[in-house]
Image 1 (cartoon, rainbow, N blue to C red):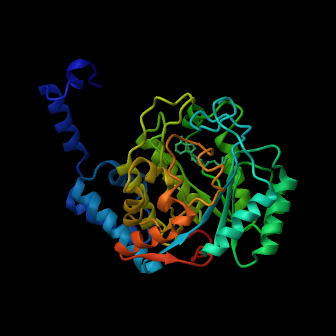
Image 2 (cartoon, rainbow, N blue to C red):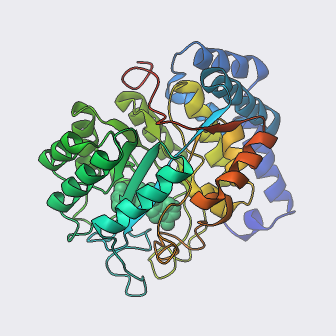
Length: 383
Ligand code: SAH
C-alpha cells in the first residue's frame, strides 16, 4: 500500500499513476459487463466477485446502464406506480446507544417526545384522508411504548382502518411480541440489519447489541408471516466494499420483501458527528443492483438520500426505487425525530406535499400508486 503525502497530493505524478493503475485494474470489460447484466436479468446471482465488479469496477457509462436496466425492470413490474407510505415517528426516546444515531440514549442534546395512541390515530386519520394505504410507525426503542402499548395501538389502528396496511419499525423485540403485533393487525416490519459483518457491526454499536440478534429478529419476523424489510446504511464509518458484499449475500439469503438503503448522514452530538457522509452515487448503484436482483422488491428512495441531495429522491426512483415515505408525524414534533442532521421532512417529503410529489413523479413519467402496496411476489423473490 502506498501511503504518505506524495500519494495524497492531487496532481502529483505518483497520485496520477496510482489512480491510473487503480482504474486499469478495476475496469470491467464490456463483454464481462454484459455477461453480469445478463446474469442478473436472468434471475441469477453474479456471485461475490461478480458483485464486486458491479459495485466497484464500473465506469460512469456502465453505471448509467445499470441504473437504466433497473429502471426498465421496475417500470415493467410496477408500471410507473410509486407506493407512498405515511411515516409516523412515534417516539424519539431510545434505550439503545448506536454510535451513528442522533436519538442514542447518551445524546443529552436530543429533544425527546412520544406520541400517545390517540396522537397516532390522529395521524392515521389525516393519512387516510390524504389517501395513504400504509401507515408506518417508526420510533426509538422506547420502554414506555412497551409491547402492551404497541399491541393496543396496532389493534386500535387496525379496527379503525381495516383497509390500510400497518408497518412497524420499532426495533428489536421478543418473538412473542412480534407475534402479538402481527395478530393485532401488523402486516410489515422494517428492521435494517445495518451491516452483516459482525466486526463492522461492533464498530457501529456498543457491545450490548449484536448483529446476530438482529438477524434472529429478522428471521422470526419472516416466520411469523410479516413482509420484512432489511437493509443497510451506505458509507457508514469503517464500511468497506467487502462489508457491502457481505450485506448483499445476506439479502440474497434472507430474501426480504423490502430493502431500505440510505447513505450514512452524520448526526451532531454522536461519536460519528464529524465523519463524512456516505456516497449518494454508491447508494444509487446499490438501489439499482438490488432492483435487478429482486425485481418485485419494495425499495424506498430514502429520506437520507433526499437529505444529502436535493434531487436524491428523484435519482433513487430513476435507479429502481418504487416507494417513498412522506412524513405524517404531527407538525409539532416533526424535526425532533432527528436521527441525523438536516433530515428532510417538509415539502414533497411531507404528507401534505403529496400533490408536489405527484407533480414530481409525473415529470418522470411515474405516478402515485394509491393502495396498500403489498409485496407482489411470493416469499421474497428469487432463490
Ligand atoms: N429504532 C428503529 C428505527 C431506527 S431509525 C430500529 O432500530 O430499527 C431507521 C434507520 O435509520 C436505522 O435502521 C438506520 O439504518 C437509519 N439511520 C440511523 N441513523 C442514521 C444516520 N446517522 N444516517 C443514516 N441513516 C441512519
